[in-house]
Image (cartoon, rainbow, N blue to C red):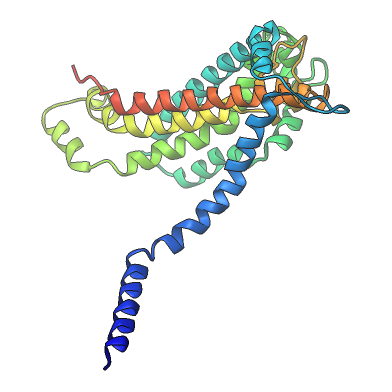
Length: 305
C-alpha cells in the first residue's frame, strides 16, 4: 500500500472513530431541536412580546419592563395571585391527606378490594369539562341535588359557587373529588415497594399499628408523598378549565385566579403585550413553587424522635 493510500486509510479510521465516539449525538440532537422548537421558541417569543406595548389593532411599541411594573402594581393582579395560592394550598393538602388514607386502606387485604379500587379511581378518568358541567348542575341553589341532600338531614341550603365566601372551598371540593385517586395511586405504589422485613422487625419489637405508621410507614413514604404534592401543586396552580366552566371567575371575581385573569386580558381585552408579561410572571411562580418543593423533598428528613 502506498503512502497516500495509508494516509487515506488512517483518515478514514480516524473519522470512523470520531463518528463512533459521538454517535450518541445523532440520537440526542434531533429531540433537543424538536423540544426547542416546541418550548424554547414560544418562551423566547413570549419574553419578546412581554416587553412590547401591544394591543390588537395597532403596532407594538417597545416598553421595556412597563408591563411587569403595571401587573405588579395592580391590585386585581395581586389579589389573583393570592387567590391562586390559597386555592392551590387547599387543592394540594386535602387530596394528599385523603389520598394517603385511601392508599393505607386499599393496601390492606379484604374482599372486594379490586372492585372498590376501580370505583375509587373512576373520578380521575373523567374529563375536567364534563366533570365541571355535572357539578354545575349539582350546585344549582334551587334545582341542585346537593341542597336537596342537605335538606334531608335538616341543614340549610348553600350557595356553593354562587357565594364569594364559599366558592373557593367548593372548587377545592371538586378538585379533591377529581384528583384524590391520582395521589392515592402514587402513594399506593410507594406502599407496594416498601420492604416487608422492616414491618416484621417492628412487630417483633412490640410496635403497635400507630407506632408502625409513625416510625416506619410514614418516613419511608415521605419521598412518594412529596412527589405527589409536587405534581399536584403544578396542576393546582395552572387550574383553569374547571374553574372557568363553574364560575368564570365570579361571583365578583371571588374565584379569579391568575389563569382566568390572564385569559380575560388576552382574549377579552386583547392586550397581547401585557398578557405575555403575566404569562412570564406566572411561569416564574410555577418554577419557584416547583423548586421549593423539590428542595423541601431533598432537604427534609423525617424526624423519628
